[in-house]
Amino acid sequence: MAEPKARLNIAMIGSGFIARAHSNAFHQVRHFFDVPFTLCTKVVCARDSLKLEAFAKQWDWEETSPDWQSVVTRKDIDIVDIAVPNAMHAPIALAGASAGKIVMCEKPLAISAEEGSKMAEVVRNLPNLVWFNYRRVPAISLAKQWIDEGRLGQIFHHRAYYFNQSGADPSKGQTWRYRRSDAGSGAIGDLLSHLFDTARWLNGEISNVSAMTHTFASNRDVDDAVQVMARFANGSVGSFEASRYGVGRRNGNGFEIFGSKGSLAFDLEDLNRLQFFDATDAPALQATRNVLVTGPDHPYSTNFWKPGHLVGYEHTFIATLADFLQALAQQKPFQPNFDDALQTQRVLAAVESSAASRLWTKV
Image 1 (tube, one colour):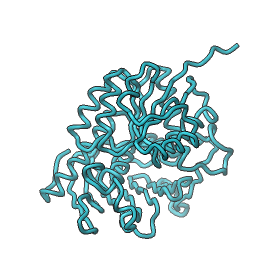
Image 2 (tube, helix red, strand yellow):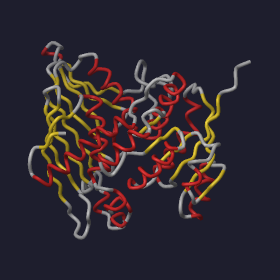
Image 3 (cartoon, rainbow, N blue to C red):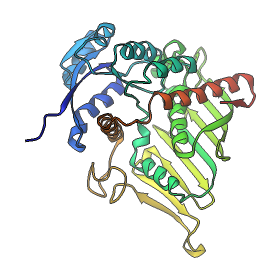
């Protein structure tokens, strides 16, 4: 008879869109991965009692509470999951870590590098995770594998973009993501943070940036758009563009990477596909391959569906959680963690500094 799995009780703070993605992962992970723990969605916290009760019922949380401070210190809680506006990340993470909890945090880590540094320090000896979920898109994981295998050779260019059209919607302009007091920044923290995390994972550290920001909406105190030129430590150069005014793009998050032996291209709006050009092929055979990354022999293809059956946004959170739980059981480090996210936060800080000074800025 198999030994019973250790139980981990989760307290999640937040009941919005991203809390749904986290909740789904907590329930679904055991269906796709042989995880070494039993997860219990113990208590969810939020301020709006009516919405909170409905959320808890829909996503099968045992308890609700409007008071996260008392919940994160409870002895029966093992994991504190942070799914609230950016300005609340630090106080919840610090409280959870001080109580010795496993801490999971939505991106970006913080509203400043200074705040992020305090958070990374306090969780350093505790298991921790930051939900930069796009690393677990199978096509992006395959890109990482091929780059590490040297299929692109020396990297020359890393181009990345993230466009959506949320900023052009007047109704969304009143939400917390468009207030500096709650979000810390606009497209920089919301969109550019994803681009930098993916770029750092695929192509290494960013050393210098030159940036500009722009706000299209009057009386809005966060950036609507940001453009960045960058130098990487490996000698390659990069360009990054993020905007909430990319009318016609719902979630256009993509990259192109060019090297001496070939190139790769990806776009999240077609997340099961990876474009690959192999410059080592005979000239008459050289052409861009449109690779459907659903298996066989692709990342996570044995965990989800049969080859040719597509995965979605939700699976990236499930795979992130599964990898974290395996690392936790094996007492191995997991990435991306708070230290990873802190380095991304430092790049974001350099972007803001460069945009203000109009000078190249060292990270």
